[in-house]
Image (cartoon, rainbow, N blue to C red; front, side, top):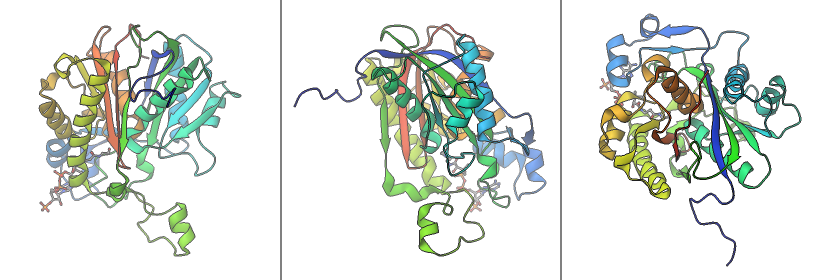
Length: 343
Ligand code: UT7
């Protein structure tokens, strides 16, 4: 057999991160506001999840509008007004059909370029990064705008205290350009994986072809997001730990040499368990979960933007990105953080 790429190694030119932006809708919902309508407490939410508040969209906004704001900021940070492709990670598209990315691209003045959605739930951004890197490696595009955007507030059961406090809306984006593997910002190899045997642990039961094709109308709560939290927690720690080890190995790094861990922000206790499993000092894990909650596909790029803006992520840091979510799906990659401004 000839020509088969070695697993985890990106053939061809590298994809180099050269722009970054994040955006949150202005409306904030505090824990106190949730306590007024759900059987919960600020103390439970803070101690069990680390979340103090989350941002949510208001009427007239959507995942697409979040993506446009974050995408515009990433382009500005890259000092570019065009790219060769747009990849949008989301599981809350504006409509079931068509994909949201073409309209986002058009609103950014990028009509004409390839633009499509990637659905890997909370792992979506790392999958979209891998896809963007692939577009560059194959020569399909010289630069790619990769966006993670979600509006989970639109999927939440207003009476479910187990999901209501956790999720928030937002978007983050990066620009990737063609470059050299040893440049700051060059993405290392990817570790990606799924376990579809466990697809029922995180789901929206209705609205897809399975429910529609059955001819049985959806139940009253079937359009809402549902999660078996305890099991998901366990798998999140297990899978992200394994995936970080693999991505770090592919980069030729050691886990101890990770300066910053940019992990999906699902629960502060998951972050603590993950750093403990990796035997990393907890302060190496970047975190903004207290302010934004779990923003699904937006989580990792929003975290990067917030961390650059507050100075906890700086040029030269060796960074591992890792994420986990419904599917089950997980993924990780590495990069040496480049000199750039988030906006
Ligand atoms: O982004 C995709 C990946 N997602 C994740 O990784 C999420 C992973 N899961 C989690 O973060 C956690 O499992 C949750 C935050 C969802 C739940 O925390 P937990 O510590 O696993 O709680 P639990 O489900 O075991 O529930 C413990 C108790 C239960 O009461 P009993 O049975 O012990 O009396 C729940 O009914 O806490 C109760 N509970 C609540 N109490 C007050 C559950 N939700 C709430 C709430 N307020 N909001």
